[in-house]
Amino acid sequence: MAASTSPEPARRNGKEGSEPLATVAPLVERARAAMAAFANDDQRALDEAVTALAWSIYKPENARALAELAVETTGLGDVESKITKNQRKTFGCLRDLMRVRSTGIIEELPERGIVKYAKPVGVVAAITPATNPCATPVNKAMMAVKGGNAIVIAPSPSAWDATNATVERMREEIAKTGAPADLVQILPRPVTREATTRLMEMADLVVCTGSQNNVRAAYRSGTPAIGVGAGNVPVIIDESADLDDAARKIAASKTFDNATSCSSENALVILDAVYDGAIAALERAGGYMASAEERERIVDTLWQDGKLNRKIIARDGATLAAAFGLPTQAHGAAFFMVEETGIGPDFPLSGEKLSLVLTLYRARDFAHAKAIAQAILEHQGKGHSVGIHTRDMARARALAEETDVVRVLVNQAHTFGNGGGFDNGLPFTLSMGCGTWQGNSLSENLNYRCFLNITHLVTTIAEDRPSEEALFGAYWAKYGK
Image 1 (tube, one colour):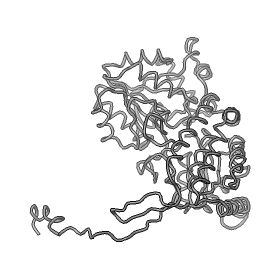
Image 2 (cartoon, one colour; image 1 turned 45 degrees about the vertical axis):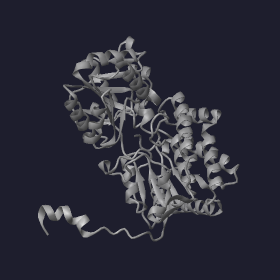
Image 3 (spheres, one colour; image 1 turned 90 degrees about the vertical axis):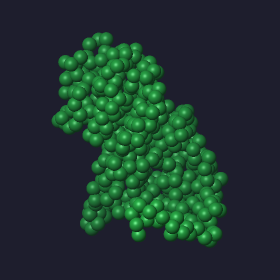
Image 4 (cartoon, one colour; image 1 turned 60 degrees about the vertical axis):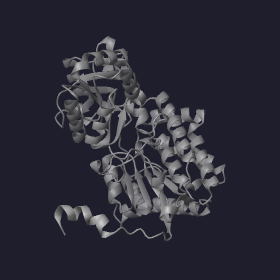
């Protein structure tokens, strides 16, 4: 995922520490005052505020204006895709949030004598990336305010204009409901590492979406933190798959927002029995298969000094075709396919590309395909997700059992399904946890429960004490006392 800031610990004394404190402290103070003034124990007030935040970006003219500003400001992605993202993700998130309680009693378990009360976590510091400078801030703000919290956003410095415009719209809309506008704030420009670090230190919860440097800084801040991981999604196509259906979904997913999503397919692992047929289906869906010579030019252009070339990532197909020096027939392609056999640091095509370049691996059989997918994830993206196109659910279950990822998508377009979909049960989000496999504290999609503290009211129940024989009997019989 594209980086936002890369915070480093600021000095607590002297100029480097005092300037960020002077900038950040008033924001946090206003956030706490806004929480105190907000009716955050009133579910109706919470839901109205959340709906206002959603409308601030879902409103058609706002969705377009913010999408255009995001692309203009960052140079990343595609306007029409960002309009879709601004609306689809927001609508789905609002659907999820309107179906749940987030204050007062949220669950009763009379058989266990437990009643659960939801309460705010406090001021949330939200680190957001350049790849989603509008949708991600709104997504996080909706979840935070649903829990009665205030949020201060630290955007990627390169995306500040777009994120600031988004925050301004959120503040204007939420004020219409009577809620304090200061429930949603943004770090002022320039967004520095020191100011971002100070914000994380002063907040009650940090939620970080962005580079792994940012995630590690969030965990070092001393504040409870939720970080998410980098994607590098491998997807298997087996011999039972509907090849044209798979190709259409992969093409739609790969090309969405010029592949800026961390959930975008980065590699296809295709079983040998259907390899040629799958390539033909992908070509019908708009893909261009690069020759061996063209492959080398793609690699040399996409990576500069061992790093992704920021001048061409997240750009449209025509721009990439020209940059790669591809022939005329490639200039109308939606995405570009390159074959690879190696995995690891010496094989850059095996990693995340943030571009319309799709790496292809040929597998002998399903066991080999699983091994390739697992090796790709071990190299980069472990814990994030994997996909499979198949008619054999036993294959999908085996992949889930044997692969260390949080999400396994079956016959779906990853970009549209991984962060929640209207035809799957994952919650809508723009931040996907990867578990301890990638050093994250979250092994699910970021959701409103991440922004709640829970008080447990505990009353007595009928004694639930089994006998020693019930618990130890089998062990005694096998091993003795």
